[in-house]
Amino acid sequence: MTDKRFITSEEVARELDVSKSLAYKVVRQLNDELKSNGFMTIAGKVNRNFFEKKFYGTHKEGANAGI
Image 1 (cartoon, rainbow, N blue to C red):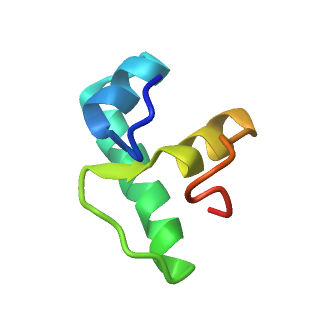
Image 2: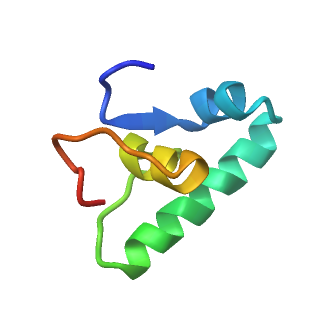
């Protein structure tokens, strides 16, 4: 993985080995959760640390580590 702050739906599809349409749903669901907690989101992208935390139970230290 790279040090980019956000992961795109296309990257999610590759990472999880799922279809693009399912990846869009995953990103939308993660963004909805972030929005409900007061965070701003970008359509089609999700915070990489949040994605990793939700799917792998881990996240990188540093910027946005609290997400």
